[in-house]
Image (cartoon, rainbow, N blue to C red; front, top):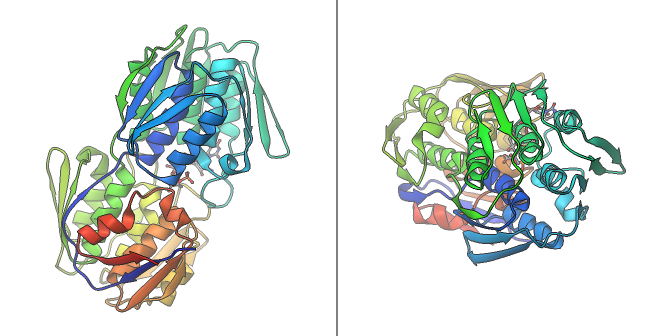
Length: 417
Ligand SMILES: CC(=O)N[C@H]1[C@@H](OP(=O)(O)OP(=O)(O)OC[C@H]2O[C@@H](n3ccc(=O)[nH]c3=O)[C@H](O)[C@@H]2O)O[C@H](CO)[C@@H](O)[C@@H]1O
Ligand SMILES: C=C(OP(=O)(O)O)C(=O)O
């Protein structure tokens, strides 16, 4: 099994090009199952979650052919199965989108319970509430979800918690339903807007994506077309922080700077120089980092998927910082390993990290516990004196395309061993 080996202490400089957004890609691919025609989907990130999902779509009967590493042509007219119960599909979070897509397409779906990163409980009650409100009957048996409906009829759905997955899943199920569906207290992440834009381009009628009220007017059918996925906000933020933690000077390219607002503002508070261009952000660090307090929130708040990376950055800022995790109940499992490298972080009540900044970290042997924990370990390794080995990098490969190549191009000493 391969590991990442990082020899720390190198200042990152140069340009990094950000890939397409994982969390948009893993929703848009299942959304293509609703389309009566061929969708050419561009700017897909070449990551394990995308490959797994295209395989799952093929096993349902869809044609999903990679034109190149970042472009796939999906023809869903040949889909014959509504069952996605493979063990490997159940390991990923986005498998839940197959429920909305297959229910919308066939009026029935049988899908393995979603997995994904383990941050404690990750219920899907709001997805089920939405499907049931649209007229489906949903049952769960032995880690498999069955959803069935004679017909889906538009209705009002209020989400009790702001959920990215439930918002998108309800859009998927509602797009071909009879009448209009209103989703209130909807999530507003950039990938929600991207999925709505994709569906609209294929003939759907979705208004309000990016606000907390989304209206989906059902249409009889969607037709094929071409679509390019937005850049990955979280990958971009990770490289911005990698630049900052090494005192570097990096142009993070092919991004939408407005998506990075909460991140740029917090990094500016920490004394990092951030210059925004049309489709890039220039990060210039070098001065001592300043401590600050951060709380994760749904968009436009600070993203939980950048919490571990930001926590590492704060751990090297002089003074006392706090990181409050308000989205997931248990997303600090990586802290103990970081403290072995010399960080001084104390987790209180499971959701608040009290951080006392240190100036030096020491290389260590680490095990990635999940995707973004793996990313934060890379950042710690870049900063540390000596060698850091990160095991279980399969988690990192779920969400970061060619991570060691991109870092090496910026001057990092990173290899897969
Ligand atoms: C594949 C994908 O896009 N994953 C992202 C998605 O995950 P995911 O869709 O799982 O996250 P949600 O936005 O649904 O979860 C937000 C919060 O709502 C709770 N909740 C959610 C649904 C539900 O039915 N009931 C419920 O209580 C969750 O436990 C969590 O506390 O959004 C998260 C929050 O931005 C990101 O960290 C993940 O990277
Ligand atoms: C939590 C994440 O992913 P998933 O929801 O797929 O587990 C993530 O991308 O940080």
